[in-house]
Image (cartoon, rainbow, N blue to C red; front, top):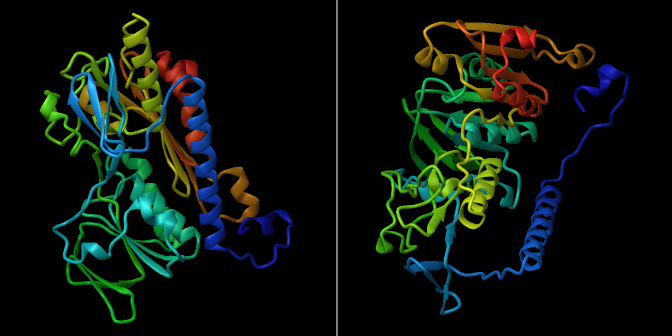
Length: 370
């Protein structure tokens, strides 16, 4: 809507209805769940709506059904959940990312604590819907696992749009006011009065109360299931994939791991999932898309690193008058000229990163790109 006038359109004052978005979201989730159930049934599978516990390496007890099922092979794919913050006074007044789209009404103001992709994406979503948004992060800058140039430019762009970002800060307590709003005190004594406080401080694997340790499954220090290169746990016939292993927390990666599991466990074709050169996106405004090594990662692993970057105003922004630049960056091994990483900040960057994964995986050089 904001860009349309530059292209000659006269657009009436736009209005937004939060309840419509939530209802349509629920409808789409129900549609997808129905498809997944149908696919399982079509393949001859059976679905149970129940919590479950491992009884032994070949038996799972369904608590809700009071029934035990047995299997030659068992796959654990229970995912992850937002990390709680029980040490924060007033944490019971806070929400997490999985509750954000179930709010009864759109808040006028929100504070989001965290600096990872979930926190950054929700900060952009809420701000885009007209919510007064403040992002609070304990670190030096947001998106610490992404390339420095991109995250600094995104930080600057977000602040230009009106998103307030407080780094080197954490919540010290949250208190509910008589009018129902929340006072959140952050480092330095600053008080933020908001309608919602969202905690996006990380995610934990869903491994609690499942009987895993009881049957001898080895766990990592963070509570994830330890697996080998083929996704096999310390029990020979029990496997684990996805966020519960805390390897790469991306849906397409979990799907890839599942396909490799089928090849290994049922087709006598041992196939290890490939976790190198994975395209990743942050659905901020503007988007981040990346694949391969960041500049800092490359410097740690290679003796000579060349950097190629271009910053420009996209053609689509010139007519609209949008004051946002795009950044493209290549990280190259100076000795072999092999492209080690590609990083983009701008419209549709996530889609571009998927395509760039192919030449990076193929080992193309900077000359090939030219």
